Image (cartoon, rainbow, N blue to C red; front, side, top):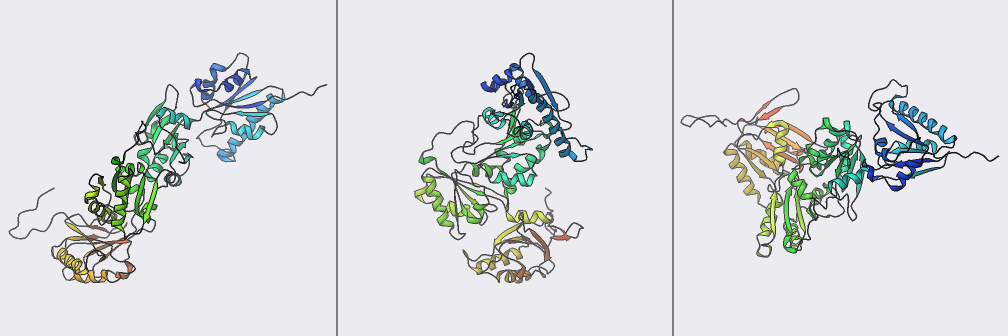
Length: 512
């Protein structure tokens, strides 16, 4: 007697939802199978079966595999994972009974069977016991790119596929360091996914795609989507940054090169403006002080040019020369590019006749002074000035005169570049100059690495300011005679009132 053979197991990918995207092989196997197996939640509606419906034939046995839970809690002793493991073991036993009886079994899978699909749980339990074959399908990632008309990635760009179940900070870190990305498993995770895109500074590049290729598909910019209306069958897509519009741009001529000077803000990408992020994403070359350039994600198609912080004129000329050859150049600065940063150097060099035809624009950023002030309240709430203690480009006697003039005018003062390894005495000299005009009790805010991992805010007074605690990563805010410090449980509140005291004969202050 000839031994009875077992049936064959097929994992069949159905594509993203349009029945016409089912492959010819998948359609043939579905129609010929003895048993059709498919999953669904407890509501009983199976997307996989609905896609395969045109290819089913009369007399087939249907194995409806109903999940015991999706996002609910469970009293199973093994928790959620234990309940699901038991479910998959039971499903495998049901399919094994058919296979042992010599019946061919097709397990339907949305998209591709081995790409975040339920079929893989059957595959792990049955493929070593029965003849098995997997038929690939069009993934939802490819479908999303198709319905958007946006390339996923190009040349040597990197595409990263991520689950939306990752914590937002972990997801944000992955998004910062890739060219293109697809984030799966949205639904209840959407709020965290959008937060991750925002933390990574890439929310304005991202798109939302729901039920791609079906008659209920929906697309929208990620930032415009209501989290309460996001189903599980949706994804967030970060397309290739090479193509920033729906049409492929025409080749640029040399005359179309440009230089854009941008401010990154005082720390990470969450401090950048959308305008700055868009300029960086579309750049060919990124130029700046090395640590600032290193803040930006590596993109295969972009060239990074980091340099020392003492070669500003050379850096500006290099940027303009690249633009003259047709490159879209972005020059990066910390904070705002017009505040002790690269905008001045670039515009100065660009004013030379040889660069007259090069388009130059400046995009603002959050300044370090604003960032430090915001941490304690509003110490710069009235008139104030901004000074740098660096004597590399101007002599100390000019700095001293300006400090004295600002103090005599009773302005609050934001002080940049207070100290460095080679400049260790200026903070003490500044304190002594200001004490000639201000009381020792004048509030002083010392902000260090604001927005960064070593952020520290110290509120002290001018008389108690310790110069040895101040370094190049600090910014000082010196209050005016009107600046006040109010102790509070969560930390002191420092503010300068907008109303200035009225002296006899002076007009009343304006409201505003």
